[in-house]
Length: 71
Image 1: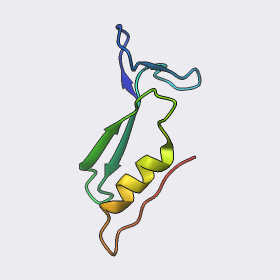
Image 2 (image 1 turned 30 degrees about the vertical axis):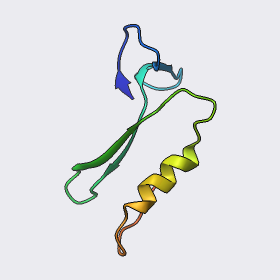
Image 3 (image 1 turned 45 degrees about the vertical axis):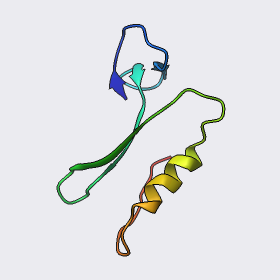
Image 4 (image 1 turned 90 degrees about the vertical axis):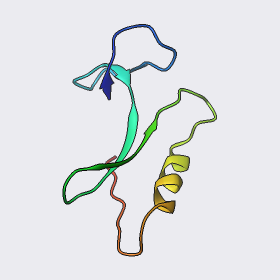
């Protein structure tokens, strides 16, 4: 979650998070050094599905790479 309290179309509110208002981002990072490899912003659309994000990230994996997710 990227903190943002202004007016924008894609601002998300999640009541149980430390940062309640902001832009939700899906990020893939290198586990060794923490470098960000890819960022996909959340689009608040009813056609938007999380499986599309996972498939997009999985397409970029190399043979010995792993994809971990929480909840």
